[in-house]
Amino acid sequence: MTMPEVFLTLALALLVTMTAGLIRIVIGPTPADRMMAAQLLGTSGIGVLVLLSPALGLPALIDVGLIFALLAAVAVAAFTRRRVGQDQA
Image 1: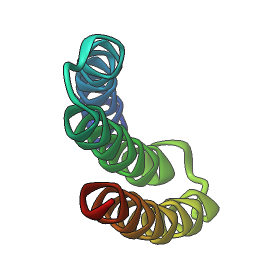
Image 2: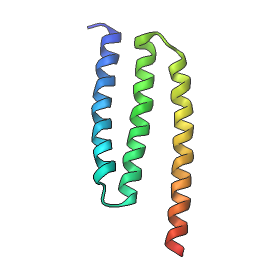
Image 3: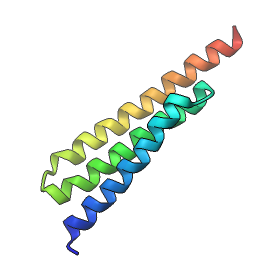
């Protein structure tokens, strides 16, 4: 098994975990569960991009993954600020 095949297999495994995260977003009982599932999707998506970059020979996918990582951090900060504001009201 060559390295690109290994990377593609691992990317497929991450896509399976992303489907589990989508299910949790739909049936999550609390907003915190849904946010954690969204974080799982973001982290898994970044992992898929990083694995696909060498497998497909597209180094720009790593840059896209880094941008997604920055956006995920901002999303968590915004969600946390929103939840704290609701708890105090």
